[in-house]
Structure formats: C-alpha cells, structure tokens
Length: 184
Length: 184
Image: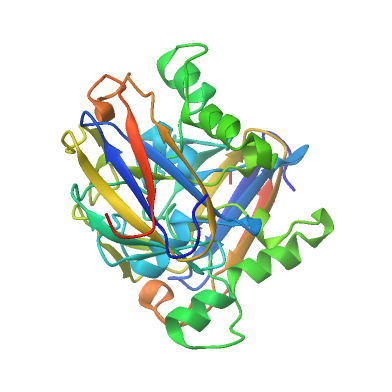
C-alpha cells in the first residue's frame, strides 16, 4: 500500500530478475493500472522516465520517475499454472498469478479479476512483423525502477519464477520493494 | 452467440474499418478471449491462419481459419469516453466500450469487466524500440477474417468509431458479422 505522493522502488537485487507489478486504486479495486490503456494513450510499449501510467478508466496512477534499465514489458500475461502445464509440460510450478492471489488475499480477488501486470526488467523483442521474442533481461545487480504514486494504491510485485525461458536467464532471484516519502 | 464448431466471419464492407471483437465462454462469462495470454503463449502480436486464440485460463476459444487482411492488433485498449476526452479533447464521442456495454447488457457486465478486445483490421506499427504507430488499415472492401468457435461463445463486435487518428482512415463504416455452420 502506497499513499499518493509516495515512491515505490523495485530493485533487482542480483540482476536479470523479472518483476510482475500490479497496482490498484486503494479506494476502488475495480480500478487498476491498465497496461493496454497506457499503451494506447501513450503510443508505446515500453514505459520510460516521465511517463504517466493509466488505469482502466485512463486516470493517472503511477509516474515513472527513475529507470536504470530501460526495458520492461506491458504485453505478456502473468504466468499461471497453465502457462507451465500447457506450454512447458510442467505441473504445479510456482507462478506469478498464484503469488498475486496470495499477496492480495485480504482483498478477496479471484483469478479472473487479476489485471494484466507491467513486467519490470522483462526484455521482449518486439518485431515489426508481430513476432515476440523472450530475451534475457538486461538489468544488472542493484538496478532499479522508481514510480511515484499518483493516487493511493494497493500494489503487489511478484519475482517471476519463470525458469524455462530466457527472461530471467533460467534462474529465480529476489527483488526488493521500497516505499519512501522522498525520491530515493 | 456461436456454438462450438460454428464459424464467425467479420467482413469489412467498405474497407479500412477496424472491428473490436470480444468473446466470452457462454457458460462462464468470467472466462473470455485474452489477447495478453494469447500473445504470451503464441509469442506473437498478430494472429494468423491456424492460430488458436486462448482465454484468460489459457483454454482454446477461437481458431483463425481464414484471413484476407493479415494485420490485426491485440494490444490497444478499446476506445472509451476518456480516450476521446483526454487524448483528443472531445466530449461524448461514440466509443467501442459503450457499444460493448449496450450489446452485452443482458449479461450485466460492468465497464471494468470488459476484457481487452482483439482489434480486427487494425494496422499498428510495432517498432523494436517500443514505439507504437497508429497506421491506416490495409483491409479493402469485402475482405474478411473467419474464426471457428472452439467452445460455445458469447461474442460482440464493435465497428470502431475512431475518426480522430488514421486507423480507420478518418471515417466510420459498417462491418458485417456472419454466423455459419460451415466454413464460408
């Protein structure tokens, strides 16, 4: 939970760790960060410093105030049990959707109510012919991205446990989330 | 409403008309076509013939069986009152979200429950640096895209009334939706 005006920093502790990030209006969980509305209104797939991210009602919810990495993703759905089962043949794999449901359990969200996350430090290749390429993250140990909350938010970050494609370079490490009153 | 096995054709009657398309599991409206899950599992932004599109639970919901155009979009949020108001300064403009809410009113959906649509005939430039470009549709009069329903679906198509950027070449025309038992 961050109050309007506070700063949320997500630090990639060891490097190359993708972090799925959700943010909701703390006073109305039906309003949330929407990457699809943000992409449409901003005409870009990768948020960068100065960008104001929007909710599903196109209200400003977060501003990117610092970014030491420069490659993030807003297209790729959070991993879930079926991502691992259908696409990789692995049953019972830890996944971001279950992480979110646990972290947000006090808000009573069901799986179909989880919005599309912004995938911090996820380095996708966007090819003009429409091809998507899951590439190794370019973030290095200690690098961070910082947001300023533009409304009171409920947020959640999941260190993505995807170890079956290159996005986290086939390992899973920690992320650190900091909440501060001043820009870090 | 289409039954499993039926074909849904969307015909661009006059050409260059974008059509936003939603599809729900007819037996559980909480499950629906999810472009973000489809993009993740298919590693592509533009669906093409043979592609099976997925729901938010990664179940097959539609197969693309014919496509005379080749450029569609799965990223851009449906237009809504705020798209026109905030991004173009126009109040009260007709929009796809309101069209969907009216067309689906018997199902009691609220705005925050509208999923991300697939935007048929929408020709976006996807640039490797993340830039998105709203380009003129390349579809010509009479061209169509055809889907086979892989489950019983409730569907809705909105002829996008966006006349303030190039996607529909600054005019709004009709789309025809056909439901058939055999491939057209």
